[in-house]
Image (cartoon, rainbow, N blue to C red; front, side, top):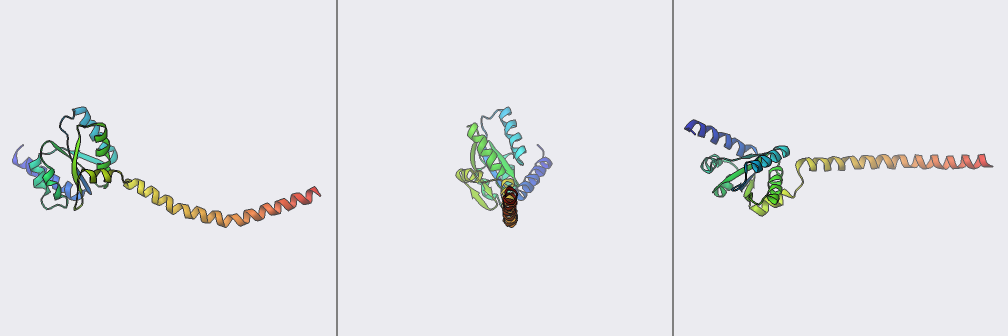
Length: 172
C-alpha cells in the first residue's frame, strides 16, 4: 500500500469514526472467510458495516474523534463494526459472537463513552431504533383508538336499548 492509499484510508476511517454513533472492536483470529462473509452480510442487513484495517492506520484515524477511547483496543487481529444506529452494530456482533467463539468482543465506544465488553453486550440488549419508533407509533395510536371507542360507546348502548324496546313492542 503506497502513501496516498494509506492517506486515503486514514481520511476515510476518520470520516467513519466521526459520522457513526457506535464502534465495536473485536478480535477475529481463526474466523474463516465464509464466517467473515456471513458476519458482513448480517451487519449489512442490520444497517451496519464491518471493516478490517491496519491497527496503526486506524489509530491515526481515531485522532480528534469522539471514539478515540478505543485506541488501546487496537492490538492484534482486530475488526471494526460500526453503524449510525447506536444498537445495530453491537447487536449483530454480540449475536454472532454467541454462535462463533472465534469472534471475541474487546469493547467499543458510543460517542464519547467508552464501552467494555459487558457494556457492548448491554447495548446489544436494547431495542433498535426501528423497534423504538414502532413502539412510539403504537403508543401514539393507542389513545386515539381508545378515545374513538369511548365516544362511540354511548351511542352504541343507546342503539341497543332502542333495539331492545322495539323488539319488546313487536312481541307484544
